[in-house]
Image (tube, rainbow over all chains, first blue to last red; front, side):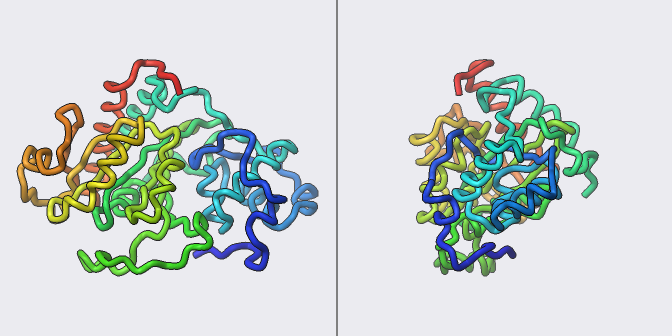
Length: 117
Length: 198
C-alpha cells in the first residue's frame, strides 16, 4: 500500500539518531498545518516534506494517519513532526482534556456516537 | 456510508479520543474497525518497517488468508472539532510490546471474543486485567449472527469478573459496533472519577 520514502536510509538516520520526542505524542494525537508555506516545504528533507504536505492535504489528522499515509515508521514520524512543530510549521494538538477518562470528553464522544447510530 | 462531517473539515484545534479493539487473531478486529470507519482500516505496515510478513498458524480459520501485520485503525468524525479513533491491537504475541503504546491515553477497550476459539482472547484478557488501567469490556462477536453459547457461560469460560460488561455484537454491523462502543465508553464513565488524573 505504502512504501518507505527512502528505503536506502536506516530510519533513525533521518532523525539524527533521536528516538525520543519531547512531548507525549500519542498515535491519535492530531496534527495540522494551518500555515502551510510552499517555500518551507521546498526546503525540508523529503520525509519531513512528505509529512508536512500530507498534513496540509489531508486536513487535521492523527499521527497514525500521517505515518501510514507517508509510509514512515511511527517512531520516525513522531520525531519529525516534533521538529516541524518546534519550527512552527505544524500544529500539534495537546487536546483540551488532561485525561482520556475526563467525563466531559467521554460524554461528548458518547453523544456523537449516539447521533451516528 | 454517509457521514455528516467530512474529515477534511476537522478543525485544527479539534480533540481526538481513542478506543482500542483487542482480541485474538481472527476475532473480527479489522471488521469491527471497518464497520464504522470513514477511512479504510489502514494496516499501518509502516509501524514495523523491519518486520517481514509473518505466516500465522491460525490464519486459515474462517478462510482468513492474510492477517493484520501491525495494526488497523479507523476514524469516525463526530463533530467539526471531535474525532474518535479506533485502533485494533494486533493479536500476534510478537506485537504485544506495541500494546502499551496503543493503549496509552485510550478512553476504553473492547476485547473481542469468538466463542469457537475463546483461548485466542486469553492474552488480551490477561493484559487488560493486569497491565493496563484502561477500563475494558468484552464483546462476543456473533460471526453468523447466531449466539451459540449463553453469555454467562462465556463469562465463566473467560473468567471475566462480574464488574466487566459482557455483550454480544456483530462486528460487520455499523449499528452493532456503535452500540458496543457506547457500552465501552459508558463503562469507563462508571469506572473512573469525573475528572480522572491522566
